[in-house]
Length: 611
Image (cartoon, rainbow, N blue to C red):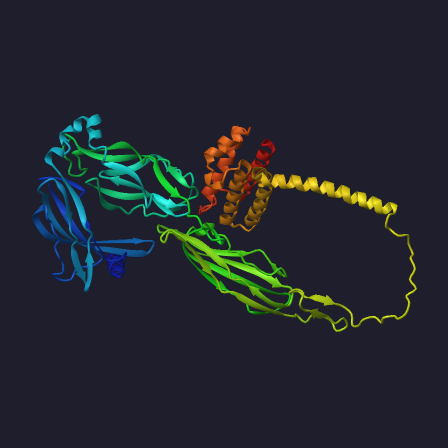
């Protein structure tokens, strides 16, 4: 019985091995060291995963600058694992060469090629840096752990750079910012990470593959480069904007030989040391140009490349019936900031709040997707109406010009709704207005002939006491109206005073809109409306254009006008929380808390700043 169980378990294992699935697709890659010393032998491996090459299909790459000492040799490998009942297997076919760098310099191994069932697979061109014998790090210095270990990592062996897709853009034009690490050493981890700040930009973090590294040549040296963080930036101000530096301490690993005897089991003969290196990107400047003059009236700040589709209502409607006009704007650009185009309807139409839907995603090429606006309305009066075309304008950086998109004009025929009763017939008198003037009744009263024999039933008003009182009241009212209008005209010319007075009113309106989005649990729209309320209030209150506002000058202006430093700091912190939470996938910031703090700080600042 025991032998039977043993055979049964062996049979199950063999069946599992043959029924295991292969994980992943067929890949063909090259494995080489990043840097070698002239005269030092090293291995170049070409690894084909999950397949075997067709016979005699391997094409040897160019090893120019290297001396081939041995190879090619082939080897196959197979691994198997079973986790929670799910089995998987992986096979490898490896072709190995042993080569040696002849002279110092940068060389490139050209792509190798192999065929698998008639399909071609190639490796990438791979650069290798060959350093002179004198540049080889002295292995005998391992005993001097302090300075010797530090010297194993040169100052330019680990670099941190903030790479921008462009540094000269128009306001609203997207920039891709990549925080990239360049290494010529093994990295064990990071400490004291300080990411860059993007004052003056609207920023959104892009997803990156933290395990994907590429090989690049920088300043004549070969590095393994890896993107740590990547952002999509939209400049909100013009002029020279400065991106503050990012600072990271990278912990590199250095392997040094020791005098300890080699142990065939534990390895021995070498030790691993951690070497910290402080890295910084330094400040990076971006030149933001103003959009050209002569923008169309329908331009509201859209920058990029867009198309517009419209869904028009039926041309035949009945009075008091509802319909909708839909506009869909698609493309790539600052879609997040798009505003609904203006729809002009006759005065007899009731236009309700515009409903918007969107599908937006951010990529390295920019923000793409669409925003759709639906205009619901009710036609109240019968008649024929001409609805003008909707226009949408955007600035195209590629064409360096404004582009205007237009829908088709529309003629609506509104018929009576048939709701009038037979007892009170109604007739539309044309020639006055689109709504028509309604005449009630069925006939005209009979005209009486002869003397009317009229007599006065009251004293005449002319030159009576009441007449003079009314005349005096009219004169006084005219004088008062004159001075009131004169003051209103004078105040209206004072734009600073007008903006200051309306600041709180406009902020309250935007807070109400934000509260509505909060009840709907629309996080994106809520934080966007909160940012508009906060930035707009400060722009009106301080008489500074939104494009010139920064967190720093807000704090300075508030303190200069008598606002405590704590309140000024609290205001800018609320803006930062809104920026951070606007597109955060996790609800790290509660909308109710941000709303309450925003209303409270605006009320407090309004009570402190007096004009």
